[in-house]
Length: 280
Ligand SMILES: Cc1cc2nc3c(=O)[nH]c(=O)nc-3n(C[C@H](O)[C@H](O)[C@H](O)COP(=O)(O)OP(=O)(O)OC[C@H]3O[C@@H](n4cnc5c(N)ncnc54)[C@H](O)[C@@H]3O)c2cc1C
Ligand code: FES
Image 1: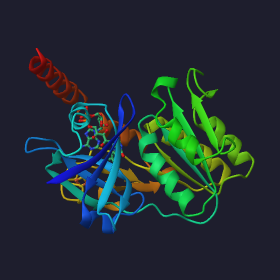
Image 2 (image 1 turned 45 degrees about the horizontal axis):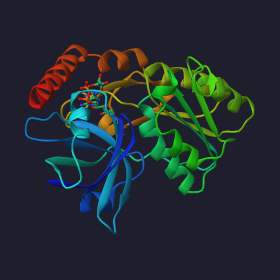
Image 3 (image 1 turned 45 degrees about the vertical axis):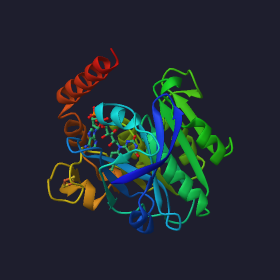
Image 4 (image 1 turned 90 degrees about the vertical axis):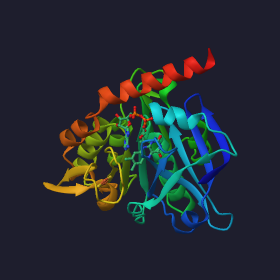
């Protein structure tokens, strides 16, 4: 059992949990992830490490409520316990020297923020591009603003309700043209990752995407997280989650992510109805 030590609410749907996990805290590295199972009937869901402290024996993860499990997780409070947390899983992000552009789109901002923070803490120059469809879906703006000055923070929304109107590739292209970045890290919806890859490739800037296919065991056994990279089948949990974004088969990833949409919708509806019944 893993005890929740602290719960921080960043916005209506975004939370950070600090959890007691002394063994994991000794081993976690930036870019790795953990898998949570809330209780015996819970599904296994992956989250990226957002922080850890080996001396105090805790780890942190940030999550956005988007479906049944993340909604259930958001109801837990400090003192409550999570049945299982497995990790650290996956390979750490390779933090090459030079200046970085970290791009997060939608829920990907929750994953991009710890990577940007760790790059800043390790002395890299970092530009962050935050993208969302509209202002209300932009996550963690205060956290990014605390981390980076306005010259290094680029906010954009599809409808222009915050920052500049447009998609993440607009400021990315500017940074590439200005030779301001040596390396890009991108995480978010498939179109954001795909078109960031195309833009970077055009300017010869190496680009890593943190892929987020559905995962179950996280150890290379179930095959659920199969992705196609450079024509080869890879398991995102053990071979990734970071891959050369210019080599990823994005259509394949998008199809795999959507494989259980109907069941996910049904599961959320059933959970919400059960919660409503409890409160009647
Ligand atoms: C390596 C990795 C790291 C991640 N890190 C973070 C993070 O730090 N913060 C964060 O908010 N989210 C993160 N995610 C996404 C997170 O796992 C999903 O948001 C979560 O599983 C949704 O579960 P749900 O039951 O609430 O939603 P559901 O309604 O079940 O699913 C909504 C969508 O979430 C994705 N999803 C559902 N189940 C899984 C699963 N078992 N594995 C992967 N994706 C799934 C699918 O795209 C699905 O369509 C990460 C995903 C991966 C693969
Ligand atoms: S999650 Fe099962 S093989 Fe990767």
